[in-house]
Image 1: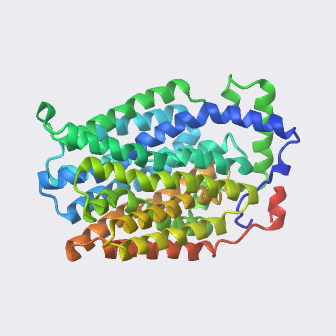
Image 2 (image 1 turned 135 degrees about the vertical axis):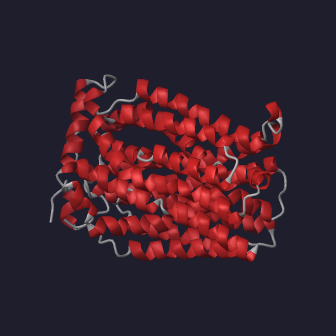
Image 3 (image 1 turned 30 degrees about the vertical axis):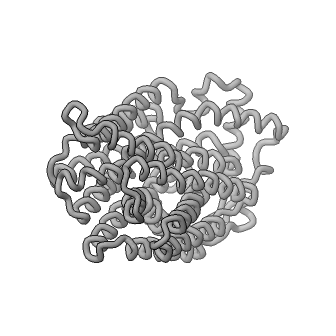
Length: 445
């Protein structure tokens, strides 16, 4: 079977009036997406708020740039080790209990980061945080395949992934306010309050997931029997074009590893922006933590729009490869422009905004490729493998930028490195074979 951009066009679904099908899937989206969206906002804040904490934490604990970069990135080592088994467990025991477990444990650990007092304790808590969160993101990507056929999944995925830029939009100003406004309260520093106040809501969201989420369509009492049957037929029709090999077969599949390498390059750009944006804004002359937080919301705001439009276009055309590649090139160009405009704060921010738009637009489009290839337990393992390997860039990118900044006293070369990786990702996407025409009707080759 050749790797497809997606496997089933709208016409391949069970015959149903478009207006009725649209209303049915809107009902699904209103039930699932808001909860998943909020869960990912708190997840992403807990993952990257260390970028804002750095504004105070680094001086308070006397961390070098390399120590910070290693601590920020070591999260992804724990994430990598436990990702595949976590997602396989989710597929077996159900999303409700497993996502709830993930969120409660990582919320407690995230709040516990306030007690870090040395490089070693920083490394240990970040590693444990990654291990606790392993399986959340690929688990949700897998979970969406239970509810949406391919022709509707891109839009649903983009709405879920919009939590990343929204976390930046909301998290930047909130983080800046906490750092500035909570400094010294109860004898704690602002960075300690940051971890506490952004970790505890995750525990609450875990409880809501336990009470609110349904594992499968058949469990959804809020759908009518006819709606449950219609969605099940849509998903079953799409499954004809997917493979479900043994888990070990997925791990040996070169196409899965190619996608994992592509995702590594794309997420390098994402985490480079996420972890270093506050420091980059500070380096262009902005000093107030609150002002840095407010300005950091600008690139993420434009990123939301770019993400939605790219996913909508990819869904309509049933094409993902070129959409992702072009977006990656745009992201690289924005990074290069921001470096070239370093002497002009306005132009530098414009470049970072374009970079964020390009990087964010790649994400929902990219996930149309692996979810169109694999089904069943193979999807659980394959999506987890791609995500876990790709997210190793979350370890490599911050650490490398930290080393580069220690050596050069500037983030410019680090941003050039991220731009190069995005270009490499675009080139690798051209190695992903486009869909065979037969796959568009759900048949295999």
